[in-house]
Each structure stands twice: as C-alpha cells, then as structure tokens.
Image 1 (cartoon, each protein chain N blue to C red):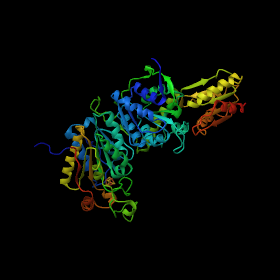
Image 2: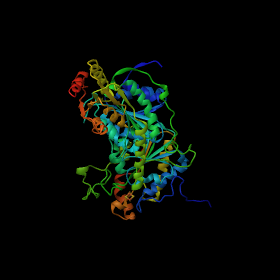
Image 3: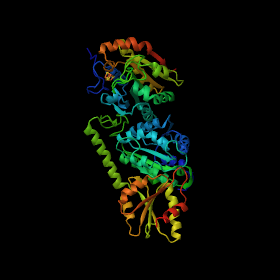
Image 4: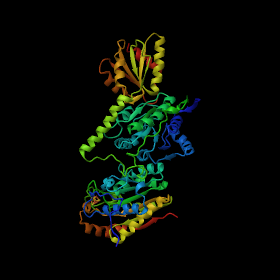
Amino acid sequence: MGKSFSQPAALSATHTHYCPGCTHGIVHRLVAEAIDDLGIREKTVGIAPVGCAVLAYNYFNCDFQEAAHGRAPAMATGIKRVRPDLMVFTYQGDGDLASIGMGEIIHAANRGEKFTTIFINNAIYGMTGGQMAPTTMPGQRATTAPLGRDTGETGMPIRMANLLGELVTPAYVTRQAVLKPQQVNKAKKAIRQAFQYQLENRCFSFVEVVSTCPTNWGMTPVDALKWAEDTLLPYYELGDYKVPE
Amino acid sequence: MAKVLMKGNEAIGEAAIRAGCKNYFAYPITPQSEVAEYLSKRLPEEGGVFLQGESEVAVGYMIFGAAGAGERVMTTSSSPGISLMSEALSYITAAQCPAVFVNIMRGGPGLGGILPSQGDYFQATKGGGHGDYHLLVLAPDGVQEAVEMTMQAFTLAEKYRNPVMILGDGLIGQMMEPVEFPDDLKTEPTNKDDWATNGMAHRKSDKRNLVKSLFLDPSALNNNNLVLKAKYEQMKKEEVQYELYNADTDYQVLITSYGTMSRVCRTSIDMLKSEGIETAMLRPKTLFPFPEKQVFDAAGKQSCKAVISIEMSMGQMVEDVERCVKGRRPVEFYGECGGEIPSPEKIIEIIKALL
Ligand code: SF4
C-alpha cells in the first residue's frame, strides 16, 4: 500500500507557534498541498502579513516576503507585475486585510491582479491579544469591546467575500470554512482552484476561510468550533461569491 | 550624443529607462506628475511595467515587492506623498532592498503649496520613517544633473542594497534644459540570487530566500542594525559628492547651498566678485553621506570669516553644516520657503551684512 499521508514539500519541518486548536495550521497545510499538487513550489513567493501568521515564512518552504500591516496586496502587486511568471500569494488575517489593509485589497482585486489571497477570518485580532476586528460579531466580546461589540458605535461586521464579489472586474471570490472535515475538503479544493486560476493567468483569486481563535475567544478548541459554526456561519455564508466566466 | 531639450520630470523618467529600469509605480501629485505621464507612454514601448497605484502608501509597497523580487524599480512623488511612502522606506531599508525614490519637493508642512521648496531635507537625510536607517540622498542642481543622478542611483542602490533618493525641487521638475543621457552611466544589474525572492527554480542552491524586516530576537535585530550601520559608514567613505565654487580665492564668506538654491548663490558670488568681494560656495551633491570633512576644511580657510547656509527652508541643512564646522567659524542661516526663491540681490545683501 502506498503512503496515504505525508508532509507536503511546501511545508517546512519547523514547529509552528500557533496556539493549540488554532485552525491556522490546517489552512497552512491546505495551501502547501495546493502548491505541491500544482508543482509550483519553486516559482512561488508568499507574502506574510502582520498578525498571528507573521512568521508564516518559517512554515512554508518557498520564497517569502514579509509585508507591513495590511500592505501584502500591494507587495504582491509589485512582485507579480514585474515577474508575471512567479506564483504569488498573500496570507492575511482580518485585522490586516479588512481593517488597515482595506484599501490595498479592494484595489488589487479591482485591478484584477493575478495573485491569490488567503484570508483568515476569525472575527478578532489574534496576535495583539483579542481586540475588536472589523469582522467581530455584534455583541462579541473583545479586549477593546469589553461589553461586546456595539454595532451602533462600530457598525456591522464587514463581509469581505461579499464586498469583493460585488466588484465588476472578473475574479474568483469564495468563502470557505475549516470547522469540519467536509469543510476542510471543500476549502482545499477552493484553494487549489484559486492557484489554478492564477496559473492560467485568469484573474485575481480570493479565498476567505472562516477560522477559530480559541485563545482570544476564551474557549476550548472544541467550543470554538461550535461557536463558529453557530454564530459566524449564519452571517458569513459559505460559497462562491464570484467565479470568472 | 546630441542634446535634447527636456522638462526635468520627463528627463528623470527617460533617465530611468536609459539606466535599465523597466518598472515604475506611482501616484499623481503636483509638481511631479509629468514623470508618470511620460512613463505611462514610454514604458509600454520598452516592454516595461507602468502602474498607477491607489495611494502613495500602496505604491511604497509595490516598490518593495518588485525590489524584493530583484528587479530595478523606481517611483517618483512630492513631499506629502513621500511622507506616505516613508513607512515603506523604513521596511525596504530594513529588508535591504535596492530601489530608487525621487522627491520633487514642494512647500510644506501639511498640504503646503505646490511651488519649489527644500523643506524635506530632514525627512530625506535623517529618515522620514521609523527606526535607525538612512537613504543615500542625491541632490541635483538642474536637469542634466537630475538625469545623471537618476542613472547613478540604480547602481548605488544595488551596490548598497539600500534605497536611494533623488531630492530635487519643483523648479528642477518643471524647468526645461538641454540634456544628454550618458550611456556609460548604465550598469548591468547585480546578481540577486542569494537574497531576492525571484523564484527558487533557476537558483543553483535549494535555499529559499526571505525578504523581511522582523527580528524578534534582540541580538538578531541589533545585528541587522549593525549591518545597516556598516553600509552607512561605507557610504561616508566612498560616495561623498560635492562641488566647490570660487574656492581657490581668499574668500571671506563660505556659502553652503544645494539644488536650485545653489544656482542663485552662484550668481550672487559672481556679482560680488565683480565688486571685488570674494565669497565661495560648497555645494553638497550627496546630502547623505554629507561632505563633512570638506565643509570643515573649507570653513577653516584663513580668509573665511563666516559660513552661511542658504536654503529654501527654515533652516535644515544648516544643522549639518554647524555640526561639521565644529565651532571654528560662526555659522549663519538664511532661508525662505513658501515657493519664492531668494533673489541674488537679497543674498548679496545678507552676505554683505556678515562682512
Ligand atoms: S491567537 Fe488565535 S489566531 Fe492566533 S495563533 Fe492563537 S488561536 Fe490562532
């Protein structure tokens, strides 16, 4: 019998610093598997964000650049424009992409930049310690919203996939989750598809992944998965928001 | 090669192409938008990349990405835009990537005005962004020098793996002068395989490259800063450029001035000479590294009674001049900013008051 499970070549052997039960590890693996499947590791450049994944460059086994907070799509634009033969992806969280980096992601998507963005939506700032994000749910507690998010003061959570799906420029925009095995399998397909569109030089591709942050949600990993399923998924509906013609 | 009559901004764009730069990202801002307009037409003809970014903030990172991937790249902007790019400049410097930034200065602070100014000397030479870093700063005094410095900038940026800034002002960007593009200033790009994220495929080793500025370990961060410092020390030894004017006379006053302002000072020196009064000028062409020893020596000439820094600012370079004169002569300052350039007559009046 052949080997049915092994470490992707696009992942390094380094132990991650992610908290126990955090879903970052799953998404890293899915990205690495997509890179392996398409055989593109040697021409891939990743862009690490600022946030929990700031050290992502230690975990992937390919060239990497590290951006300032929110600027990964601009860096990816710079690389991809001058080296269209490279495969470029950004890996960003919600504080990075939906708050400080909103301008960069909207314009990169609208220009139809031919790179791929993996967007981790866990409804909170992770690395800085649980502050409110643009994606934090109404009433959800955060260290900067101790009584829960007051949408009268801070507005409603931003749905990035819906927002980017509204742009007229052709793109692949999808929202996936990694809370259950079936979702992980679907997310894997979506991530591979996103890279495939890039490989074909078709369009900008964006995969939002509804994830968990047990540490800053103050929950066990299992409770976090359940809370995400019950609270996040009804608001952040899964599915494709835009598919290129 | 025959000379052609060109506007400064367009000449800077053409110089970048002649230097082998095929990549340009920018955001429009007066008084330098002609660079972008010119290159939006010229770069596609050369098979190059022209992109108008959504903001100067984003453009700074487009430059960072492209430079990190090992390609020659340039942007141009003006004072408020450079403030927005200063975040990226700090990161690019920390990550040791070569890139060329052109600042065609306008008056500030704030929105200021759109007329020529030299108010960004501090920002350019002392680091406009956070952390310990320097740009290598070249200050042309006209269109020809702007061309030559733009071409040299790519070579210097690669030699040091550090951003180089051309610090001009609105007048240099807007005026037309006859220029030529010296072919010998074009250099071959350096091999960047040992650090750039240019794809592992064609590299000899299986080593992956990281372009980054995060060093969580204190000694690693200190080491990165020591590497940067060593480069700045090397620049001080190898890259200082300056011009002395009328300095072989027994001058009574030494003027320090750069860029557009130095051209006016030159006229004043000539006019004073015809009245029998000798003055001289030291014009730094590199603002960082600053001609420290040369300023010290020129100020120390026996006949020299005083040094005066004349600038289109409220007194910025004068702080470096004072530092270098080390108290051996009084250091005075005269400046105007807001867009009006001090006239030769005004400068003569100021200098006579020093005698
Ligand atoms: S803080 Fe949250 S998102 Fe960050 S590693 Fe820990 S669990 Fe994951």
